[in-house]
Length: 214
Image 1 (cartoon, rainbow, N blue to C red):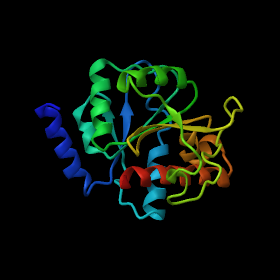
Image 2: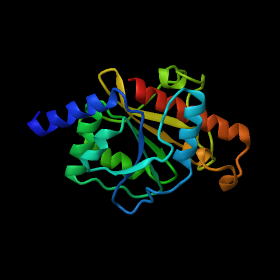
Image 3: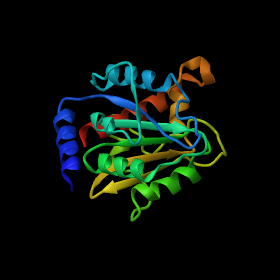
C-alpha cells in the first residue's frame, strides 16, 4: 500500500469515527445516476427519526474516482442502464471499500449486466454472492425474516440482495428486483401504498445502520 493510500485510509478512519454522512455516487457510462432525487433525503429523514442517526439532510454527490469519496461511510448508487468505471475509478472505489467504506447499489431497472461487468474491475477475484436472509443486515434495526422486500414489480422476479465481502465485513450490497429507491421517493412520485414505502425505508435504514456500525 503506497503512501497516498495510507494517508487516505488514515483520514477515512479518523473522519468516520464521528461522521454520519451519506453521498450519491456519480458515474460515467450514460446511466442516470441522478434518478430518484427525493430518495436519499427521505431515507435520511427516516433514519434520523427512527434509528438515532444525525445525518446531514442534504446528501452530497461524489464522483466514483474522486478521493472525496473517503469522507463518506455510506455511498448510494442507482440508475437505469449503462455504467462505466475507468481503471482509476475502479482502484479508487476498491481502496475506499477495503478501508472501511460501504456502497449500496440499487438497481432502478436495467443496471445488472453493466454493474456486474464493472465490478469485476473493482474486485477481479471476487464475485457477487447472494446474501442469506439470516444475515444481520436484514434484522439489525427492523426485521425482514424473508430477506430483501419487494417494492416494485419490474420483471416480476423475486427480490435478491447480492454482496461482496472483505473477510466477514460486507462492503457492498446490490439490491435487485426490489427498487428500494423508488420506495423512498415522495409518495406522489409512484403512488406506492404507505406500507410498501415503509418497508422500503425500513430496509434502507437497516443498510445504513450496517454501514455505520461495521
